Amino acid sequence: MAQEITQERQSEIAHANQLQVEVMKGLQCGEPVERLLLKALESMALKENDTVSYPEAKKTLIAVYGDALGQPVPLQIELEEFEERLERLRKAYEEGKETEPKDTQERVKNAIMAHENRIALLKKRIGQE
Image (cartoon, rainbow, N blue to C red; front, side, top):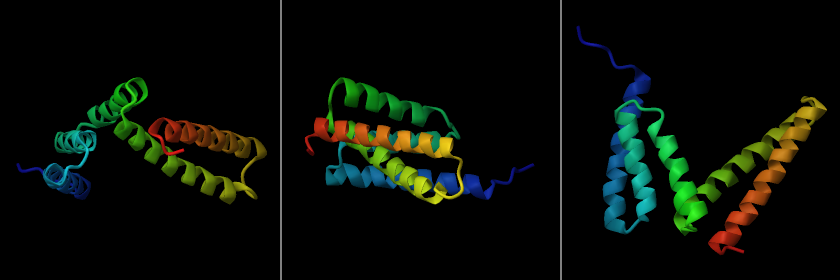
């Protein structure tokens, strides 16, 4: 019996194929190799239905090549992630002012400050400040 592929799985495979195309185009355009590596790893993980390898590889790339070795591209990738999360945290904080308990809002506020501090550090290490 042939198994039906779920819509979600079809979407994952399509995204994996798109990432493969982006890797090839990125090679031709001179995109940073770290970004290409992450796209290739994400594509492989999606095709294999592997939910562990890509996030782990990304964390390792940022920790080793960014934090430890100070390479700018992994630091930039981390900066982008922190900026996106900070935006979501600020939105949640604003939306929760009237509805969330005070202790929850305090935790969100602390997370915002931690993200702002990390962003400042990353920008300094990259040389954006």
